[in-house]
Image 1: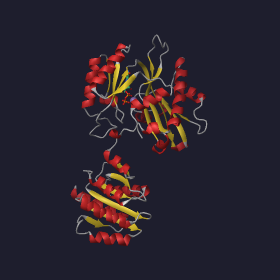
Image 2: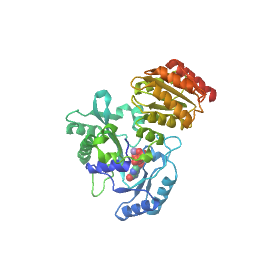
Image 3: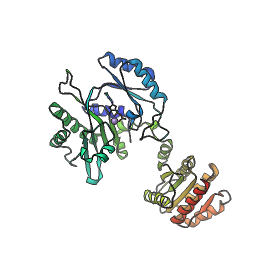
Image 4: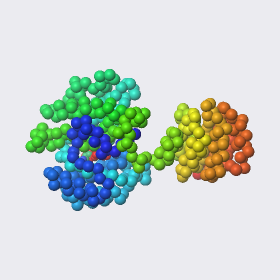
Length: 401
Ligand code: GDP
Ligand code: MN
């Protein structure tokens, strides 16, 4: 589960990691008032930041540093009335409903700091770089030596000596070292305490020297926290941070029916039981020159209702020009799928070609049901096996396209 920056920085702040003062707002008026309050209480600048579940906001113009409450108002108005488009958003961009208004920070240098689940090493790994602020993937590609990694011990976690070593590798000195070490240790604790799969601060900055911090202060000015969905049952408070407005509506609907659905860019809708079969179905579609519109696993024990809903979701996707049903009936009974196809045909109608490949439990009964409904579903084609099904659906789609 993803959460917003304003929520993530609250978690950071509660862990004792320094973050700039500020608050989340939802209107232009609130943004102006919050900016005024920060400026009146000593901030020399204010940063307005769009709260969406995507990065690259800086370059997209959705992180703005301003000097007056009026400018804050303008920036807020722009962000709340335009969709944000960045390399990390869909091409149509994302609507912005919330803003974070924070005191601006005088930056001397930007760093990258994160901890994430590292499957290759069966543990969590801390990643740090002195080339912060920008996309870390780009740094990794351009200059991999600029990225420093430190594996956390699975039982005892990040050790202070490891944090110190990382701080030195980042080129930090003086009081900055102990500040950075403290942040690293707190971040490692936060990852475990929240069951996060990623905690990321990009950028972590060292501020320019000031009266209060003559050596500069190490402070987090961006925050990203992803939580492992499987742990949400025991992280009630974090589960409440879920913002349905940020999710794909079709994926949300699928979730409530216990379906695993992921929208993709292609035009062939897929309905499959089992994640492995769904993956191989997508692979074989690709192999025959097609492009899946979604990943959809109805699971081993889906109800009629869920399967009918699955068809509704697939058919409501405007990109879908053909549907491939690939079911291997084990616990799942093929006749139930056949009935769901008939129901979906009645309710929504298959205006696009439908290729069906069924095998396994109750397959004869399923074939009989579909044979009977042949007149009601003229666009339906039966396939003998997976390759046949993939070829047929790819051919059907390229004809319509
Ligand atoms: P992202 O682009 O979505 O990752 O948003 P960030 O919160 O990381 O902000 C992008 C960039 O804006 C940062 O890398 C900084 O260069 C700049 N920025 C953000 N906050 C401040 C601030 O308080 N002061 C200054 N001077 N720059 C900031
Ligand atoms: Mn950032």
